[in-house]
Image 1 (cartoon, rainbow, N blue to C red):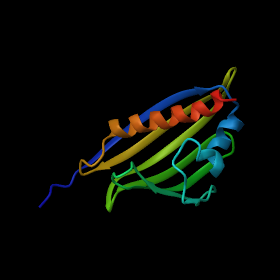
Image 2: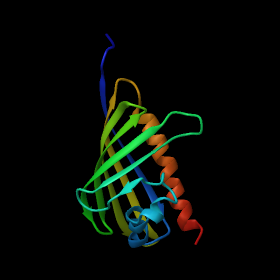
Image 3: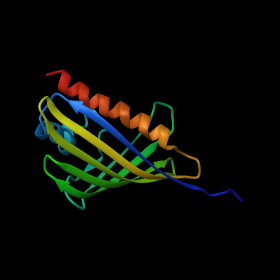
Image 4: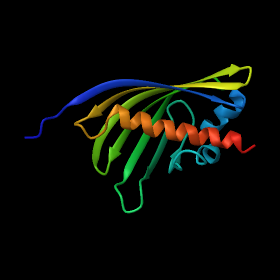
Length: 146
């Protein structure tokens, strides 16, 4: 019998963007805008109780499934969602994520906080934080193209 483990961990990433909170929030809330920096959603229902779901992965590689449920949305200020991540048919993590948008003199301070349970050694907080940093850098690239 395989040993089953659950590892709980939290990470916080802060990024500054040269755009208003309204613009940065729109990059999360509009499916076309979000698809420019995050894997394109197969389902995108940006409302409390709504689902966002996508499947994908590297060419010739494993398929990952991301399925989120929006728990709270405060326009231009905060998004809270829960999500599960699967690798093929195996659940590898479940998380609660809070994204906060704060107005600054130079644009927006984004604070991304993820509290996760990583299952059976299939994923780690270090891998998730690394991948999230890459995605949030892609988001920043959108505002640098203006």
